[in-house]
Amino acid sequence: MAARVSLRILDLPEQRYSCHGCGDCCRDFSVQLRDDDLERLEAQGWERELGEPVTVEYRGRRYLRQRPDGGCLFLQDDGLCRIHARHGLHEKPLACRVFPFNLAPDARGPQAGLNYACRSVRANQGASLASHDGDLVRTLRQLPEATRPAPPRLAGDLRADAGEVDGVASGIDRWIARTDVPLSTRLDGFAWLARSLGSASFEDVRGSRLRELVDLLVSALPGELDHLPVDEPGRGQRRQLRQAVFARIEDPRFTDDLARPPLSARLDQWRRSARFARGRGRLPGLARGWAAPATFAAIESMPPIRPADDLDDLVARWLRGTLRGGRAWGAGYYGWSIVHGLQALALDVACVGWLARAHAAGLGHEAVGIDSVGEAIGRVDRARGRAVWLGTAAERLRLRYFAADDGLRRLVRSQWSEA
Ligand code: SF4
Image 1 (cartoon, protein in one colour):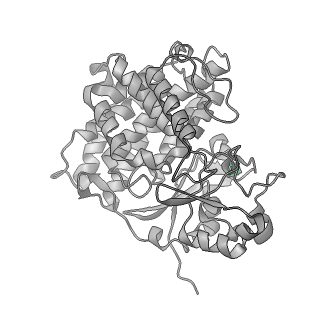
Image 2 (image 1 turned 45 degrees about the vertical axis):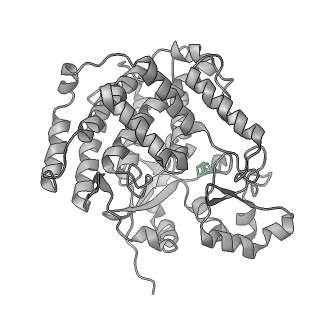
Image 3 (image 1 turned 60 degrees about the vertical axis):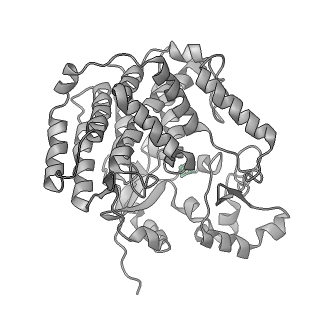
Protein backbone atom coordinates (compact mmCIF):
# COMPACT_ATOMS: atom_id res chain seq x y z
CA MET A 1 0.00 0.00 0.00
CA ALA A 2 1.33 3.49 -0.88
CA ALA A 3 2.58 5.49 2.10
CA ARG A 4 0.26 8.25 3.26
CA VAL A 5 1.52 11.65 2.12
CA SER A 6 0.63 14.43 4.51
CA LEU A 7 -0.49 17.59 2.75
CA ARG A 8 -1.70 20.86 4.26
CA ILE A 9 -4.49 22.22 2.11
CA LEU A 10 -5.04 25.94 2.54
CA ASP A 11 -6.74 26.25 5.91
CA LEU A 12 -9.19 29.04 5.17
CA PRO A 13 -12.72 27.82 5.95
CA GLU A 14 -14.21 30.90 4.24
CA GLN A 15 -12.74 29.80 0.90
CA ARG A 16 -14.44 27.29 -1.41
CA TYR A 17 -13.72 26.00 -4.90
CA SER A 18 -14.97 23.64 -7.59
CA CYS A 19 -14.17 23.89 -11.29
CA HIS A 20 -17.06 25.34 -13.28
CA GLY A 21 -15.41 24.79 -16.65
CA CYS A 22 -15.02 28.41 -17.78
CA GLY A 23 -11.83 27.42 -19.65
CA ASP A 24 -9.93 30.56 -18.56
CA CYS A 25 -6.94 28.49 -17.47
CA CYS A 26 -6.64 27.06 -21.00
CA ARG A 27 -6.30 30.54 -22.52
CA ASP A 28 -3.41 32.95 -22.17
CA PHE A 29 -1.87 30.72 -19.55
CA SER A 30 1.71 29.51 -19.72
CA VAL A 31 1.93 25.81 -18.80
CA GLN A 32 5.43 24.83 -17.76
CA LEU A 33 6.20 21.15 -18.35
CA ARG A 34 8.14 18.67 -16.25
CA ASP A 35 10.24 15.84 -17.66
CA ASP A 36 7.48 13.29 -16.98
CA ASP A 37 4.94 15.56 -18.74
CA LEU A 38 7.20 15.66 -21.78
CA GLU A 39 7.56 11.87 -21.75
CA ARG A 40 3.78 11.42 -21.60
CA LEU A 41 3.18 13.89 -24.45
CA GLU A 42 5.80 12.06 -26.51
CA ALA A 43 4.20 8.68 -25.80
CA GLN A 44 0.78 10.05 -26.74
CA GLY A 45 2.16 10.77 -30.21
CA TRP A 46 0.75 14.27 -30.66
CA GLU A 47 3.55 15.66 -32.78
CA ARG A 48 3.21 12.79 -35.26
CA GLU A 49 -0.55 13.23 -35.36
CA LEU A 50 -0.64 17.02 -35.59
CA GLY A 51 2.48 17.38 -37.71
CA GLU A 52 3.81 20.27 -35.62
CA PRO A 53 5.62 20.79 -32.29
CA VAL A 54 3.39 20.84 -29.21
CA THR A 55 5.96 22.41 -26.86
CA VAL A 56 8.11 25.53 -26.91
CA GLU A 57 11.35 26.33 -25.09
CA TYR A 58 11.61 29.61 -23.18
CA ARG A 59 14.46 30.62 -20.89
CA GLY A 60 15.66 27.04 -20.52
CA ARG A 61 12.20 25.62 -19.68
CA ARG A 62 9.60 23.83 -21.82
CA TYR A 63 6.00 25.01 -22.12
CA LEU A 64 2.85 23.83 -23.88
CA ARG A 65 2.54 25.57 -27.20
CA GLN A 66 -0.32 28.02 -27.73
CA ARG A 67 -2.32 29.01 -30.76
CA PRO A 68 -1.90 32.57 -32.06
CA ASP A 69 -5.05 33.62 -30.15
CA GLY A 70 -3.42 32.51 -26.86
CA GLY A 71 -5.52 29.35 -26.45
CA CYS A 72 -3.76 26.10 -25.57
CA LEU A 73 -2.95 23.98 -28.62
CA PHE A 74 -5.05 21.18 -27.06
CA LEU A 75 -8.13 23.29 -26.34
CA GLN A 76 -11.01 21.98 -28.49
CA ASP A 77 -13.87 24.04 -29.93
CA ASP A 78 -16.20 22.51 -27.32
CA GLY A 79 -14.02 24.04 -24.58
CA LEU A 80 -12.63 20.67 -23.48
CA CYS A 81 -9.04 19.51 -23.38
CA ARG A 82 -8.03 17.14 -26.17
CA ILE A 83 -5.56 15.24 -23.97
CA HIS A 84 -8.21 14.82 -21.26
CA ALA A 85 -10.85 13.74 -23.79
CA ARG A 86 -8.66 11.05 -25.31
CA HIS A 87 -6.45 9.84 -22.45
CA GLY A 88 -8.17 11.00 -19.25
CA LEU A 89 -7.39 13.51 -16.52
CA HIS A 90 -4.27 11.80 -15.22
CA GLU A 91 -2.52 11.94 -18.58
CA LYS A 92 -2.61 15.76 -18.69
CA PRO A 93 0.44 17.82 -17.70
CA LEU A 94 0.72 18.08 -13.95
CA ALA A 95 0.25 21.86 -13.88
CA CYS A 96 -3.12 21.49 -15.66
CA ARG A 97 -4.27 18.70 -13.31
CA VAL A 98 -3.47 20.61 -10.19
CA PHE A 99 -4.69 24.11 -11.15
CA PRO A 100 -5.90 26.27 -9.40
CA PHE A 101 -4.06 24.61 -6.54
CA ASN A 102 -0.36 25.17 -6.16
CA LEU A 103 1.78 22.51 -4.51
CA ALA A 104 4.96 23.69 -2.83
CA PRO A 105 6.75 22.65 0.35
CA ASP A 106 7.86 24.87 3.21
CA ALA A 107 9.29 24.10 6.65
CA ARG A 108 5.97 22.48 7.60
CA GLY A 109 5.95 20.07 4.62
CA PRO A 110 3.91 20.26 1.41
CA GLN A 111 1.31 23.04 1.18
CA ALA A 112 -1.57 23.35 -1.27
CA GLY A 113 -2.28 27.03 -1.90
CA LEU A 114 -4.76 28.51 -4.34
CA ASN A 115 -4.33 30.67 -7.42
CA TYR A 116 -6.90 33.47 -7.59
CA ALA A 117 -6.60 33.62 -11.38
CA CYS A 118 -9.40 31.03 -11.28
CA ARG A 119 -12.83 32.61 -11.60
CA SER A 120 -14.47 30.07 -9.28
CA VAL A 121 -11.88 30.73 -6.57
CA ARG A 122 -12.50 34.47 -6.78
CA ALA A 123 -16.27 33.97 -6.79
CA ASN A 124 -15.87 31.56 -3.86
CA GLN A 125 -18.01 28.93 -5.53
CA GLY A 126 -17.98 25.21 -4.95
CA ALA A 127 -17.00 22.60 -2.41
CA SER A 128 -14.85 22.97 0.67
CA LEU A 129 -11.11 22.92 -0.01
CA ALA A 130 -10.68 19.83 2.17
CA SER A 131 -12.86 17.86 -0.25
CA HIS A 132 -10.03 18.05 -2.83
CA ASP A 133 -7.62 16.23 -0.56
CA GLY A 134 -7.76 12.83 -2.33
CA ASP A 135 -6.99 14.24 -5.82
CA LEU A 136 -4.25 16.50 -4.53
CA VAL A 137 -2.52 13.76 -2.55
CA ARG A 138 -2.61 11.50 -5.62
CA THR A 139 -0.92 14.25 -7.64
CA LEU A 140 1.55 15.00 -4.87
CA ARG A 141 2.82 11.40 -5.03
CA GLN A 142 4.23 12.23 -8.45
CA LEU A 143 6.08 15.22 -7.06
CA PRO A 144 8.65 13.80 -4.64
CA GLU A 145 10.46 17.16 -4.45
CA ALA A 146 7.31 18.77 -3.01
CA THR A 147 7.01 16.25 -0.17
CA ARG A 148 10.34 17.14 1.45
CA PRO A 149 10.32 20.03 3.95
CA ALA A 150 11.92 23.13 2.45
CA PRO A 151 12.46 25.78 5.15
CA PRO A 152 12.24 29.22 3.54
CA ARG A 153 14.76 31.91 4.37
CA LEU A 154 13.57 34.39 6.95
CA ALA A 155 15.94 37.10 5.75
CA GLY A 156 19.47 36.88 4.36
CA ASP A 157 20.68 33.31 4.91
CA LEU A 158 18.65 32.58 8.07
CA ARG A 159 16.27 29.64 7.60
CA ALA A 160 12.86 29.76 9.29
CA ASP A 161 11.57 26.65 11.05
CA ALA A 162 7.95 25.47 10.98
CA GLY A 163 6.95 27.42 14.12
CA GLU A 164 8.47 30.62 12.77
CA VAL A 165 6.72 30.29 9.41
CA ASP A 166 3.43 29.72 11.23
CA GLY A 167 4.11 32.64 13.57
CA VAL A 168 4.65 35.14 10.76
CA ALA A 169 1.80 33.84 8.58
CA SER A 170 -0.78 33.62 11.36
CA GLY A 171 0.21 36.97 12.96
CA ILE A 172 -0.21 38.88 9.70
CA ASP A 173 -3.29 36.84 8.81
CA ARG A 174 -4.97 38.00 12.02
CA TRP A 175 -4.43 41.59 10.96
CA ILE A 176 -5.83 41.11 7.43
CA ALA A 177 -8.86 39.29 8.90
CA ARG A 178 -9.84 42.26 11.16
CA THR A 179 -13.17 43.23 9.64
CA ASP A 180 -13.63 45.90 12.34
CA VAL A 181 -10.87 47.89 10.59
CA PRO A 182 -11.48 49.38 7.09
CA LEU A 183 -9.85 47.40 4.30
CA SER A 184 -7.72 50.35 3.15
CA THR A 185 -6.25 50.63 6.67
CA ARG A 186 -5.55 46.89 6.78
CA LEU A 187 -3.75 47.12 3.41
CA ASP A 188 -1.77 50.13 4.61
CA GLY A 189 -0.95 48.22 7.81
CA PHE A 190 0.16 45.22 5.78
CA ALA A 191 2.58 47.39 3.77
CA TRP A 192 3.86 48.83 7.07
CA LEU A 193 4.37 45.32 8.51
CA ALA A 194 6.28 44.22 5.39
CA ARG A 195 8.51 47.28 5.64
CA SER A 196 9.02 47.00 9.42
CA LEU A 197 10.03 43.33 9.21
CA GLY A 198 12.35 44.30 6.37
CA SER A 199 14.29 46.62 8.64
CA ALA A 200 14.45 44.17 11.59
CA SER A 201 17.58 42.21 12.45
CA PHE A 202 16.63 38.59 13.14
CA GLU A 203 19.86 37.00 14.42
CA ASP A 204 18.70 37.21 18.04
CA VAL A 205 14.97 37.17 17.36
CA ARG A 206 14.21 33.55 16.67
CA GLY A 207 11.59 31.00 17.67
CA SER A 208 9.00 32.32 20.12
CA ARG A 209 10.69 35.75 20.13
CA LEU A 210 9.94 36.11 16.42
CA ARG A 211 6.30 35.30 17.04
CA GLU A 212 6.26 37.88 19.84
CA LEU A 213 7.79 40.49 17.54
CA VAL A 214 5.12 39.92 14.88
CA ASP A 215 2.38 39.99 17.53
CA LEU A 216 3.82 43.23 18.93
CA LEU A 217 3.85 44.89 15.51
CA VAL A 218 0.31 43.70 14.75
CA SER A 219 -0.95 44.89 18.13
CA ALA A 220 0.44 48.36 17.37
CA LEU A 221 -2.00 48.58 14.45
CA PRO A 222 -3.97 50.51 13.45
CA GLY A 223 -2.97 53.22 15.97
CA GLU A 224 0.65 53.33 14.81
CA LEU A 225 -0.38 54.35 11.31
CA ASP A 226 -1.84 57.63 12.61
CA HIS A 227 1.59 58.57 13.93
CA LEU A 228 3.30 57.69 10.68
CA PRO A 229 1.60 59.66 7.91
CA VAL A 230 3.07 59.25 4.45
CA ASP A 231 3.05 61.53 1.41
CA GLU A 232 1.63 60.82 -2.00
CA PRO A 233 4.01 58.70 -4.11
CA GLY A 234 6.58 60.67 -6.06
CA ARG A 235 6.96 60.67 -9.83
CA GLY A 236 9.69 58.02 -9.77
CA GLN A 237 7.63 55.77 -7.49
CA ARG A 238 4.58 56.06 -9.74
CA ARG A 239 6.73 55.22 -12.74
CA GLN A 240 8.18 52.17 -11.00
CA LEU A 241 4.66 51.06 -10.05
CA ARG A 242 3.62 51.15 -13.71
CA GLN A 243 6.72 49.11 -14.58
CA ALA A 244 5.82 46.61 -11.85
CA VAL A 245 2.30 46.32 -13.30
CA PHE A 246 3.77 45.73 -16.76
CA ALA A 247 5.97 42.94 -15.36
CA ARG A 248 2.89 41.24 -13.89
CA ILE A 249 0.69 41.35 -16.97
CA GLU A 250 3.20 40.78 -19.77
CA ASP A 251 2.80 37.11 -20.62
CA PRO A 252 4.81 35.91 -23.60
CA ARG A 253 2.76 34.03 -26.17
CA PHE A 254 4.11 30.49 -26.48
CA THR A 255 3.26 30.19 -30.12
CA ASP A 256 6.69 29.64 -31.63
CA ASP A 257 10.34 29.18 -30.79
CA LEU A 258 10.80 31.78 -28.08
CA ALA A 259 14.50 31.03 -27.79
CA ARG A 260 14.78 33.26 -30.87
CA PRO A 261 11.72 35.55 -30.85
CA PRO A 262 11.28 37.50 -34.07
CA LEU A 263 12.64 41.03 -34.00
CA SER A 264 9.13 42.42 -34.48
CA ALA A 265 7.91 40.68 -31.29
CA ARG A 266 10.86 42.01 -29.28
CA LEU A 267 10.33 45.52 -30.62
CA ASP A 268 6.64 45.33 -29.82
CA GLN A 269 7.37 44.28 -26.24
CA TRP A 270 9.94 47.05 -25.87
CA ARG A 271 7.39 49.62 -27.14
CA ARG A 272 4.75 48.47 -24.65
CA SER A 273 7.27 48.57 -21.81
CA ALA A 274 8.37 52.08 -22.82
CA ARG A 275 4.72 53.21 -22.94
CA PHE A 276 4.21 52.01 -19.35
CA ALA A 277 7.40 53.76 -18.25
CA ARG A 278 6.37 57.07 -19.84
CA GLY A 279 2.79 56.82 -18.64
CA ARG A 280 1.47 58.93 -21.50
CA GLY A 281 -1.07 58.19 -24.20
CA ARG A 282 -3.20 55.07 -24.29
CA LEU A 283 -2.48 51.94 -22.33
CA PRO A 284 -1.42 49.04 -24.59
CA GLY A 285 -4.07 46.29 -24.76
CA LEU A 286 -4.04 44.32 -21.52
CA ALA A 287 -5.79 41.01 -21.93
CA ARG A 288 -8.49 39.08 -23.73
CA GLY A 289 -11.90 40.14 -22.49
CA TRP A 290 -10.70 43.45 -21.01
CA ALA A 291 -12.41 46.65 -22.00
CA ALA A 292 -10.92 49.05 -24.52
CA PRO A 293 -7.74 50.34 -22.91
CA ALA A 294 -7.99 53.71 -21.18
CA THR A 295 -5.46 56.51 -21.37
CA PHE A 296 -2.89 56.75 -18.58
CA ALA A 297 -4.33 60.17 -17.74
CA ALA A 298 -7.82 58.67 -17.29
CA ILE A 299 -6.41 55.96 -14.99
CA GLU A 300 -4.52 58.49 -12.88
CA SER A 301 -7.67 60.58 -12.52
CA MET A 302 -9.76 57.61 -11.31
CA PRO A 303 -10.52 57.98 -7.60
CA PRO A 304 -8.83 55.47 -5.27
CA ILE A 305 -10.82 52.29 -4.64
CA ARG A 306 -13.51 52.65 -1.98
CA PRO A 307 -14.06 49.22 -0.50
CA ALA A 308 -17.54 47.74 -0.19
CA ASP A 309 -18.37 44.53 1.71
CA ASP A 310 -18.07 42.14 -1.25
CA LEU A 311 -14.84 43.74 -2.36
CA ASP A 312 -13.44 43.58 1.18
CA ASP A 313 -14.22 39.85 1.30
CA LEU A 314 -12.48 39.16 -2.03
CA VAL A 315 -9.31 41.13 -1.30
CA ALA A 316 -8.99 39.69 2.21
CA ARG A 317 -9.50 36.11 0.97
CA TRP A 318 -6.88 36.60 -1.74
CA LEU A 319 -4.28 38.00 0.66
CA ARG A 320 -5.00 35.53 3.46
CA GLY A 321 -5.06 32.61 1.01
CA THR A 322 -1.69 33.66 -0.42
CA LEU A 323 -0.09 34.06 3.02
CA ARG A 324 -1.53 30.91 4.55
CA GLY A 325 -1.25 28.70 1.47
CA GLY A 326 2.55 28.83 1.11
CA ARG A 327 2.51 31.09 -1.96
CA ALA A 328 4.16 34.16 -0.48
CA TRP A 329 7.79 32.99 -0.05
CA GLY A 330 10.19 30.06 -0.27
CA ALA A 331 9.45 27.27 -2.75
CA GLY A 332 6.01 28.81 -3.42
CA TYR A 333 7.57 32.12 -4.52
CA TYR A 334 10.90 31.84 -6.38
CA GLY A 335 12.76 30.74 -3.24
CA TRP A 336 12.49 34.25 -1.80
CA SER A 337 12.91 35.03 1.88
CA ILE A 338 9.85 35.67 4.02
CA VAL A 339 10.75 39.35 4.29
CA HIS A 340 11.15 39.85 0.54
CA GLY A 341 8.06 37.74 -0.15
CA LEU A 342 5.95 39.95 2.11
CA GLN A 343 7.23 43.06 0.37
CA ALA A 344 6.49 41.55 -3.06
CA LEU A 345 2.94 40.79 -1.90
CA ALA A 346 2.51 44.39 -0.69
CA LEU A 347 3.64 45.52 -4.14
CA ASP A 348 1.04 43.17 -5.67
CA VAL A 349 -1.62 44.94 -3.56
CA ALA A 350 -0.61 48.27 -5.14
CA CYS A 351 -0.48 46.69 -8.63
CA VAL A 352 -3.98 45.22 -8.18
CA GLY A 353 -5.24 48.68 -7.21
CA TRP A 354 -3.66 50.30 -10.28
CA LEU A 355 -4.92 47.59 -12.65
CA ALA A 356 -8.43 47.67 -11.19
CA ARG A 357 -8.55 51.42 -11.81
CA ALA A 358 -7.27 50.80 -15.36
CA HIS A 359 -10.01 48.23 -15.91
CA ALA A 360 -12.75 50.53 -14.58
CA ALA A 361 -11.44 53.50 -16.59
CA GLY A 362 -11.48 51.33 -19.74
CA LEU A 363 -15.16 50.58 -19.11
CA GLY A 364 -15.87 54.29 -18.66
CA HIS A 365 -16.90 53.80 -15.02
CA GLU A 366 -16.55 56.60 -12.51
CA ALA A 367 -15.65 54.30 -9.63
CA VAL A 368 -13.98 50.92 -9.26
CA GLY A 369 -16.29 47.99 -8.54
CA ILE A 370 -15.72 44.39 -7.56
CA ASP A 371 -15.68 43.23 -11.19
CA SER A 372 -12.62 45.38 -11.91
CA VAL A 373 -10.86 44.37 -8.68
CA GLY A 374 -11.58 40.70 -9.45
CA GLU A 375 -10.12 40.99 -12.96
CA ALA A 376 -7.05 42.76 -11.56
CA ILE A 377 -6.47 40.10 -8.90
CA GLY A 378 -6.86 37.44 -11.58
CA ARG A 379 -4.22 39.07 -13.79
CA VAL A 380 -1.72 39.67 -11.00
CA ASP A 381 -2.15 36.28 -9.34
CA ARG A 382 -1.75 34.30 -12.56
CA ALA A 383 1.82 35.61 -12.73
CA ARG A 384 2.59 34.91 -9.03
CA GLY A 385 5.30 32.27 -8.79
CA ARG A 386 5.03 31.48 -12.52
CA ALA A 387 6.49 34.47 -14.36
CA VAL A 388 10.23 33.78 -14.10
CA TRP A 389 11.20 37.45 -14.43
CA LEU A 390 9.34 38.29 -11.21
CA GLY A 391 11.80 36.10 -9.31
CA THR A 392 14.92 37.88 -10.53
CA ALA A 393 17.40 40.21 -8.85
CA ALA A 394 15.93 43.08 -10.91
CA GLU A 395 12.59 42.64 -9.14
CA ARG A 396 14.30 42.52 -5.73
CA LEU A 397 16.06 45.75 -6.66
CA ARG A 398 12.68 47.32 -7.35
CA LEU A 399 11.55 46.27 -3.87
CA ARG A 400 14.66 47.82 -2.36
CA TYR A 401 13.79 51.03 -4.15
CA PHE A 402 10.26 50.94 -2.69
CA ALA A 403 11.45 49.95 0.78
CA ALA A 404 13.27 53.26 1.03
CA ASP A 405 11.19 56.34 1.65
CA ASP A 406 8.05 54.37 2.57
CA GLY A 407 7.43 53.60 -1.10
CA LEU A 408 5.21 50.55 -0.51
CA ARG A 409 2.91 52.37 1.90
CA ARG A 410 2.72 55.42 -0.33
CA LEU A 411 1.75 53.30 -3.33
CA VAL A 412 -0.79 51.19 -1.46
CA ARG A 413 -2.43 54.25 0.11
CA SER A 414 -2.62 55.99 -3.25
CA GLN A 415 -4.72 53.13 -4.68
CA TRP A 416 -7.03 52.23 -1.81
CA SER A 417 -9.07 54.69 0.22
CA GLU A 418 -11.45 54.67 3.17
CA ALA A 419 -15.16 54.31 2.38
S1 SF4 B 1 -10.24 28.88 -14.44
FE1 SF4 B 1 -11.03 27.66 -12.67
S2 SF4 B 1 -13.24 27.36 -13.08
FE2 SF4 B 1 -12.27 28.01 -15.02
S3 SF4 B 1 -11.76 26.04 -16.06
FE3 SF4 B 1 -9.91 26.69 -14.92
S4 SF4 B 1 -10.07 25.65 -12.90
FE4 SF4 B 1 -12.12 25.56 -13.88
